[in-house]
Length: 247
Image 1: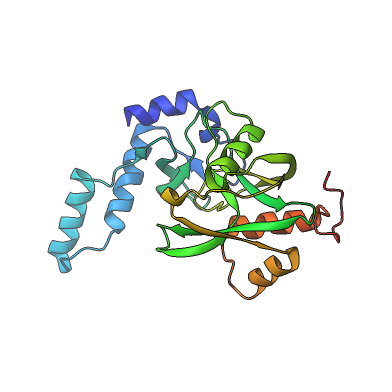
Image 2: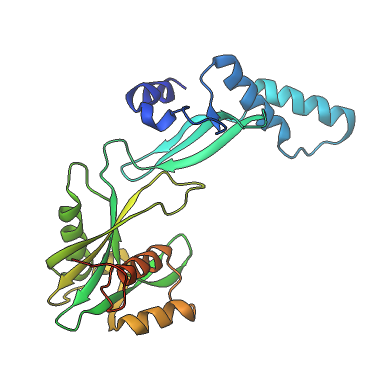
């Protein structure tokens, strides 16, 4: 837990306990041990009866489920926090966060040429083991501005340069697991070049806004980021029927 304790000191905003009725992150060592033992004891056990119950207690005492920093790399930090739930239960709660020095990731809706057609890329995703129609997106580089991240992702994925960048707000992609905040943008581009095949991008197509929304409606687009940026672009008036100016 030493590295986890250091993280608590270095990034205190990740461990705030200032919201009444919320899930409290524990810091007292005795409470942390109790939370770990409780979770360990709740795990399925192979042995039944009295012996099985005794074995579960011994396991909870001797080898409780680990807590703290489970893993960390340049893209994701995986934390398992010891917590107290609002009803008083102790337990462990997993969450994924960007590295402490990372800038926000970006999702970019490329709008091609005078017609402003939408560029969609077919991207194979390891997590789902399948292909998805998506817009451009990526993690933020440490110290980079949002506009720099937008330009870099467009260049890397579709070899395009933004002539204009239009902010469309932020989105939290999965508040039950992810601590990430991602910034949504539209970008006007003049062309599409070489695709980043090394990231398993296989092809790009251009569609109208109506065609893109039809792809959402019939299930061809299921990527949450893509659906979110299309909706925000619609609300911003970029498709001609929004409720606000898109810049």
